[in-house]
Image (tube, one colour):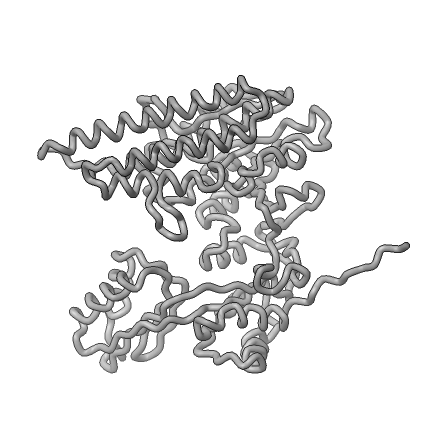
Length: 473
């Protein structure tokens, strides 16, 4: 196949007018505009308003509906979301007729959602019905509204520019069938001529598998990956507002960062594990199995090839990224653990039950330490459960930071030794350090308040600043 499947994230979508000059049209000849499929996220901030804020947890429509019982707080949130949607496309669409169509689209979708939620609330007033059983369906329905809006508005914008864009709605709105994801994608793409049409596809797809149940907010990348694999795309691209580079430029300085350029799926998996949104691990798995190469590109630098992710990584002996995150070190110590089984299983079951993310772990003869992300409240509950099973154990939770040095092949670099030396030179205490046999990542545990300083010290040790050349006069 000659086509590509390309995903655009929410932050980039909010700059839709600029994307016309970089991604959608730009300097392309008319025929070069096509043979591409765009999978779009909701405009920036909209999914947070529909569900809850991804980082702060501030409640949106869904969270308010789930907690308001018979209150009307969720209706206020829904009204605010509708106003925000209309304000966004009001800035993007230049023709009054397009704005009116987009207003009508938002009105139809959100009023439909309001009616559904009111009916559910009414049913819940009878003791025989349990709204809790429908909450996952509510979450699915609400999440799809944002992607449907952005895809519809993008298609309108491009059609006004004489691009034969086609709105492809996978959200299942007013659809009484319940197909699998594959069936949904096949039906949507069946009559599209990629040589002459530019599909703008919703990043959410309603299907029998229930994407939110399994992937939650990572569903758009999973849809994108499935679509690329199903259609046999030449390449899958993720467009971001920044390059996939060697460190956070806010920490080390933009002038010191280096674009990765080429890396492996192994590295992408490590980044996902640390909360770096290069690509959802399930999406990476789908593309890897389908043998579709993945490229992460800068949405506003169309001439730059970005970073290619594939089975073959970057060059050996090169650190590709230094990153980190705040963690809790959950330590289970039991002298009687030696030679006994079950301690690890007990801790894992409790951590899973309370939905704590295990970033890394370490164990020896009588101690098991899990490095976690999640709330202290959940960790305290896990602690109580483990102690109820093993009352003689000692359980503690410490706040630390985990800093990771990542590369496709670090075998010959002595990263562990050099990293400890670099941190000590910077006056940073190394609480623990570990590396695996595959040599794609070395982890350093440091005091939480030393996270940024540790990233800066390790980046300075392992990543050379880009060479700046002077232009000839």
